[in-house]
Length: 384
Image (cartoon, rainbow, N blue to C red; front, side):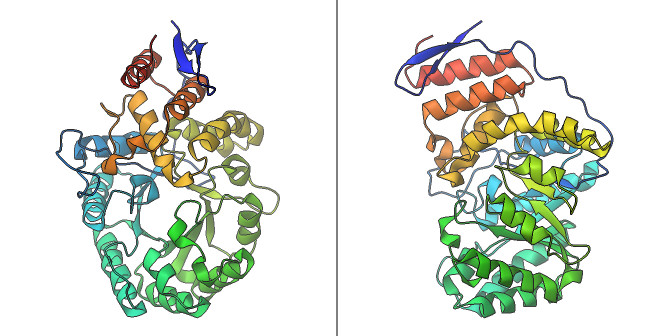
């Protein structure tokens, strides 16, 4: 069987899909690393909504995907960027997602951490209003029984006059958090509205403020998630963390080397790319648990080309590729996204994502993936 794919130069090339998927099985819980997959949401394709309407979510398919991740030993990072938080999923939808996923996690014994932000704010707001918005979301996550991830706030980025405002807001939240939280530094490549976070566009200066927040409340910080796509900066930050504070890599370009670590330490993981890579990533971490760093890298290094493709500029649209691969893998019956973001990438982009994922053996049913890819090509006017 062959398939004709766009070649990136306006023509078509013949591609022969892999006949069998990579053989992967579930196994024991991880022992050397804590690993979260930031999970996507599944839209309801039959809802009559517009891109500006509140998200219509297929709750059963969404929860089924989380059960898939938990079955492989991964934790779920819920209601974050991968779930289109702020890009189609509003706070009301995120709150419902948190409640449902946290309940499901309790039922199956899965680990879950949920994003806390300020996206219920729709107009410029004072620092007091931003604190209140954060508090509302923190209370809901804590009531659900999930761990809290304090996400970067567009409202705070717009309102803060300098580093002292970040120190004040985050200090206030950490003092009242019931349990240690994860602090999330999301770079502007993921969300342009977060330019200058921590009070400066100078990353060295911003890093000092970020570390000052942690140093003032080390007992309330379980860890940090760094999503700057800058491996050396992440390494430098993690080497300066107080004892007991973890670094969860959010670097979808350099994750194998960061998770493997060096003689001075390593990163745990909280990654959007582990949505499509879930079973393979889990297998790799179990190999790492045995002390086999080379075996871990042999499994995970070949996935970086796919990740860099999905997260290419404009990086914030990586969610489109993630959902596309979930559809090809049979985790959902359609390629529809909240906010209509299935249109955010081109046909050549999808074709290359299919080719790379197929080459890795990611599709549980390669024939199904091939059929669905051909269907998409037909929608775009391609011929086979």
